[in-house]
Length: 169
Image (cartoon, rainbow, N blue to C red; front, side, top):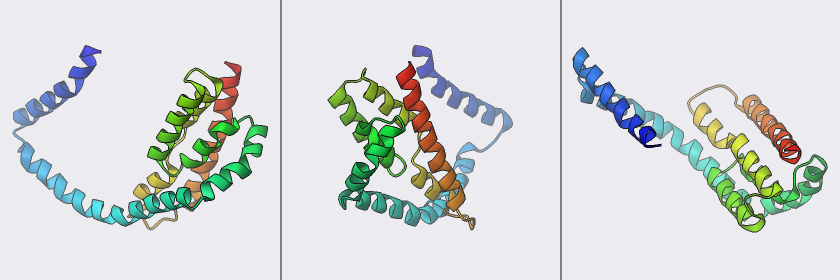
C-alpha cells in the first residue's frame, strides 16, 4: 500500500523529467490547456444544473417515494429486494443521493446482509446515467435518447443479475 501512494508523485516527476529532456515549456502548455477548458465548462454548466435540479425535484416532490412504492412488488418478482428499490431508482440521477441511500441500507441491515450486498453490487455496477449523458452530449448535436435508454436498460439488467449472484453466493 505504501508503494501505491508513491505512484502518483512518481508519475508527475517522470512527466516533468520527460518535459525537461524534450525542452517543453510545461507551464505554457498547461495554461494553454486550461484556456481550452473554460469554454467547455461554460457549455456544460446549463446541462449539469438542469440534471441536478431535476434530480432534487424528483426527490423532494415525492415522486421518487411514490415510484419506489409502486415498483417494489415488480422488483421483488425480479429478485431485487424491495429495500433497495430506492437505490435502484436514485442511482441513475444522483451519485451522492445513491451514496446516502447505500449508507442508510448498511446502517439498517448491516454490511454483511444479503440486502446490503445487493445494494453494494447495484451501487457499484450502475452509473449516474443522466449526469454522464449531460456531460457527454452537452456540446453534441446528436440525440442522446438512444444511448440513455440503452444505459438505463443495461443498468437494470445488471441490477437483476447482481442480485441473483448475491443470492447464489
